[in-house]
Image (cartoon, rainbow, N blue to C red; front, side, top):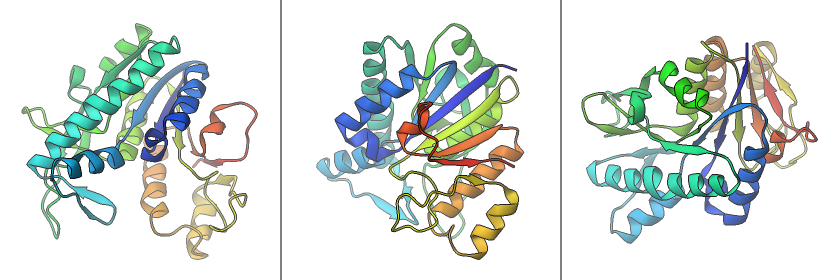
Length: 258
């Protein structure tokens, strides 16, 4: 089976021009078939405030009312996505910017209202892996922003980590898939105050041990639950760390397998 890398970059990299340029250089040099997924929450919050729209967050998740959805569509699907695509073209990487509505690639259901009404937020239900593969086979590099659709004309704000894992699960029907979650830290840390205390390998056995010790907690919990769901869904392996893990030289990151 041919290999496919799905790389996700966080908002902090997007916010810093130099970091973004350095990352995109690494991404464009990454060999083989690949997909990029990005968020842009910090930029969306900034633009919303300039427009007098208050950003409401609960447990790190954005409440997306109609006004916020308009801002997110402009910022994720327009400003951030097209900047990234233009920068990749300058690196001779033939990227194509997408939302989940494009080529009907990612369909979601609007999240049901329970204790919290998240508004126009989508939970992924279907990834059109054959349509995405047509783009890859035509030598385009898909660049997805964090927007999906419901199939009835409604766009939905969708967590970029979730899009990454669900796209990887879908594409694992056709490829041996690896996910790279790029963020500021070097990986999952044993001691949050020691940036070099990277846990190099986590599998389902050691995961439980890390949970019991409280090493994995707070914001890392949903991230890792998401990872194991993806691995059970057919993803080959998942890597977490800073952007240098995309090079052959760096082995100081966290690899997650079943």
